[in-house]
Image (cartoon, rainbow over all chains, first blue to last red):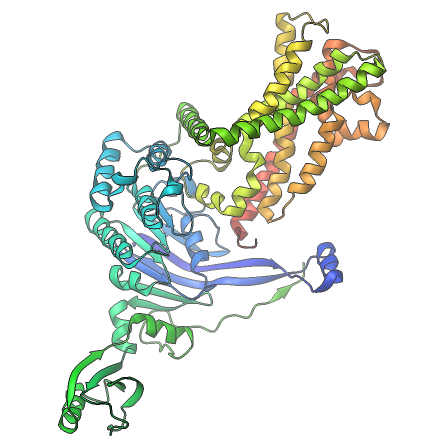
Length: 349
Length: 278
């Protein structure tokens, strides 16, 4: 059995319907009307021990509701979650000692105190043996350099330092499963890279299972093999990052720098001029229809070309296209195919 | 990591750890916190001063002397001081829900109520109210004619703790509403602090409806009036049933039990909706 097993998981929220105007406000105060909103709609997936999985989806897709159910904060409306044989909600405390969580937008560090104080408190909360605590501190210091700001109050740390400190705090008790919610939000490129490296290293060394929710596709590309895309409460893709690129990233862009500025050029059918800057021209084509080598040969025979580069689309661009509805998933690609969302229904109660 | 239940000793140690960190936080801003404490102290002392000025002119109301009135008043301050020292988190609970701190508590291997209670200590309010209480108590305990024998000391402690639990329960009721994403801070302040102001005087001063409210609805009568009457036996007690003198801890325990059930209910509702509705 997998470490995390999610079966037919559904979550409904009961929302208070707010009416417009003063009269409406009074009315909804006296006779509240509710409607059910299905945030997560019958999803299934499983995650093996040591896997790193990225959860992505547009805002309001049901990602954080799913993570809240996995961490035991929310109870499912129906369906089941098993994490190593425990139900996160029913066995909340037991499960909690095996999980860790990093919320990029919120810190669990004591704002006015040095980082070391929070670590010391966590040592008691998770009952971390002295020896393990010291080993971990040493390791985090080697990899994240937390020693340099250990004695500074958290409020004085830079965002990058704070995030490093927060990640160390979440991993201090050697959790089996760690949830990362936007772990690199607001960080510069170097800091992001450092954190990704660290996360990968921990995964390799401790075989920690990790789940990411992020809007930064590079986080996912650089750390995760698998990703689960959620939209409108259902899983629309569950598979490897490579596979989605292979399958949907068929377009290529050839950037050609010409010796002189050309007003117009002859292009073979299927190649589209999408942009131009100075002497550079950006040519888009589908790699299944047009061979790059053929295209380059044709261009070089006709024009004097200084430089050529071929770029493939970033996963981000593909995802954007999926969100916007440009790509329809066929049933073949993943176990969970896209289902039509059950209609939101109103229940006066 | 294998999870086994925390022992009482471990929980106590952890609570001490939390209070130490809270103290450290307070000391980070010594200057500001000093003035916060002073502000609380002065605010409360002003109401005492006003009471003093009025009483020097009126001499006594319904047979209550000034020192007896202040003795009664000291119950309010001392019990509130202990309440804040132990249960600041219950006062600040709505904020924990709002900021998502509660979610953090829920992913830790400890009881929720334990964490809410342990996580915060408002030293400023504790000291501010405590100082007023101690001043009032020290200046009256001798002159109101109480024989401080063992029995009376035990009664005093139990009555004080009962008063703490009654106030805790009152605050907790309004905290519970936060589980349903309803803000009741102002309603609470309206009910709690106004009733508390009533309770600064012997309840026999008031019309029947207010008396009934202070006994049955917001039972502040058991925090200050009845415990004082136990010691002072003023003639106005004859209106009330004598058993009330001993009921403070009982009222506290009953209220807390009911409120705790309400809390469990709220937690259940929270786990089905979260704080996403704010």
